[in-house]
Image (tube, rainbow, N blue to C red; front, side, top):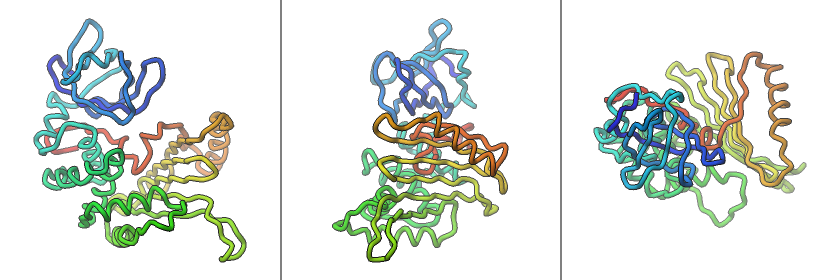
Length: 308
């Protein structure tokens, strides 16, 4: 349980409206309120205070920012806080460092401080794309591949913008890096694709594209399949979880401008089609930040001292 004086790492996942947010506190997903606006994807280190029936998190460089109800069941698995683990690994206590731990845990890797520090220094150069860079850098590191900033940038562009016409862009190093990664043994395999229209090769028109990411366990069984597709003015995100040969969960999110997207109708049709093929699978709507990229944001750090 969080105690007065403890240090907690808070990461904001999504805004729910009316000052309400969803986030992660020391690896535990919670709902909370804030007296001032917070940006999804931001994070801060806070000191725990207790005020009556609430837990108050006070950022170390600001005033009171978050108030959590005790009945939310906010717990940490250990009296040692996540910030202590990050410090022991030589990492700053922030969202980028947490992302590195999450993707490492997802791939069943040891928490190697030297590798994590190197990957953090590289990912930090990518600004708003630092989380995506951290995930890809760790995927490569697990396969024994260490890319420089330019090659990693090209690979990220290749994965995020596949299907867009950018004839001026030279992504040769990114393509070589992708081929190298997919040939090597490891957890994740990344497959960009294009959607085209036309009957003849010379008439083909690129109308969309995306990336399929597949995560395999050590027994070579598929654990996770993440699909991103940009098509017809919308971005589609799907995260499929597997247990053995069965798909047990599908989480999805659609980003589309305008009012012509009917979320309820979409979810109803998806459930109808999926459950006809895979009875018992859970179908749910998720925040984009939860399932984008490698969906590493869903990983919880449950114990400390170098184990997960």
